Image (cartoon, one colour):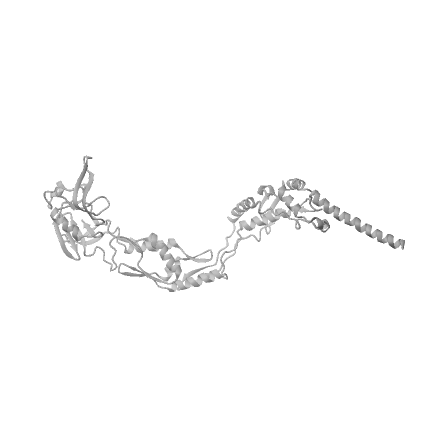
Length: 462
């Protein structure tokens, strides 16, 4: 009986002893705030160390540690860990790791505590420095590496041909940064970058690619028509297709190509800056150079409009945005309502709806460089009653001439107005008594001119 009792007492004593050791060690880890035995961080054994002690060990061990980036058997780059300034020695971070230890599970860690079981995740704290290094390495290495190519499609012979994506071996800086961080944290000296390649962003199997191609096919089957000054211009399917492109896997348009198309269209059909062949009243057919009168496509605003309509894929039939003057749906230019000023004959005619409504002798500008009346197809861009015209004489003095009717036609101050100071009109009077460039009109006729013209009326001066 005594033996049995002694045996039981021995077992209890042993249990108490083990328990005391267990509790004692737990208390030790809790109070001493040290890492479990054989704990490794970045390949360095910090078991039994406080945060301060562990920091010192890590600083020493990592000071000259060299890492090699390998792609198969090829060395991509080598660098020292200190170059990336990974703060694996941060005492605050180390204290956090110690605090996360479950002190009651210390026996489990006696033989299993490794870098994998308690890894210092430094990636978030050091993201910028690692990324900068990875960017530098990738940029340098990629100059001699092959870029990945996205899947694409091109329009040829009435249909789209698909070109499959192609893998390359250029390095992805973000993936490379992660590999570098993981290697340092595990204490590895070799970084395998063979899985850090950039991948094609768009593949033939991706839903976005299939959707984009289907939409492109639908667009090129639609009718896109511009109604432009009596013409109907259909955008060819090949042209539509040439505007389509893939951006981030989605169908988009090349706005530069659309802008170029509209610019050419405007140049072909627009009338601004073009010399006209004009049938004059007295001198037969004459050539008159460009002036302010004329129109063009408003390319800047029409480009995004056309881009949006193309991507909508519903076709169109429209007149583009127009700027300038003299646009007519029927394709006419000057039309049959205009003002004609013949400088040789010193005469002005006003035609309204094809009928001559005013015919009068005039006085144009002095035939000098400074004061000649500019030839060109101009436009009445404003009308004003009872105003004062101001300017400078040749001697530098200012003049102020009151007029009852004022119709400016160009962008330099030339216009049509009454001139009660002129004693005569027509003939050669203008050669010595001409205006500063304006078309001086007899007071008895100017009212009729004013009445029969509107803003936008072309003024042909030659």
